[in-house]
Image (cartoon, rainbow, N blue to C red; front, side, top):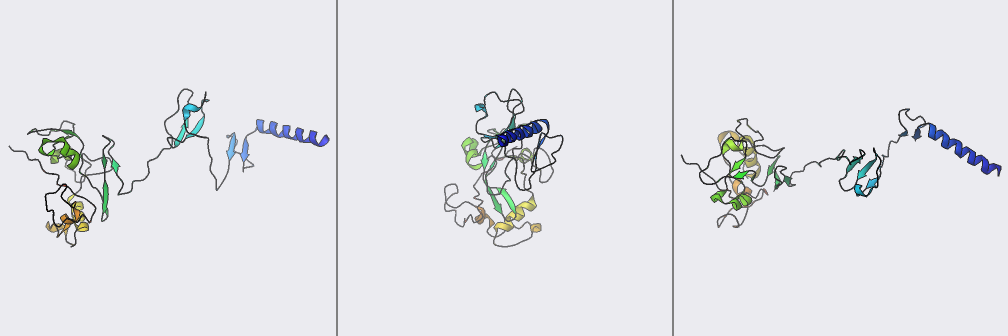
Length: 249
């Protein structure tokens, strides 16, 4: 009985001490400002993981959880759950699709040489028809081949140079491209041709290569007029015949 009594008394003493002082785990001298001070060189802190925050009944203000559905930390402010804390976007790898946050459209990408290219023409903006001309009005405007919106869906929009550049003249500017992308420069186009072509040439002489077009072009006759001979698409670029739109004055 004496042994049991001593154990109970000792346990009570330890609990009382813990209630009056902060606690250290793997740390005999916890920081005085922390109620719980955990020290480890090879482990992390694992908070409660919750699949549905709505399943928590009467959460206390300041309650912190890891939201399994959103893959981020959240806390309860007494009324609502916070937005994600520490959420992140995985690093982009060329070859993955990009999503234009402005309208949700997806675009394929392809690595050619040392450059990453969108493998589809941009299709952002509102279509204008006939001989209507674009203007610097804060609205991205495009033409579609043959004034058919379906052609923009397949081949991308047709943009006047100034509209594409957002009425700026800085070389390599973002223009109407999605965030993180820009209007290619002439040097970048030349590097593209050099990477896709079987030959090698200087960008200073306006030389357009031997077979870069064949190696960039989609094979077959689904989009190109027969026979589309020579096309290999060895670059993976899958270029389509986007067409043109000309203004007559």
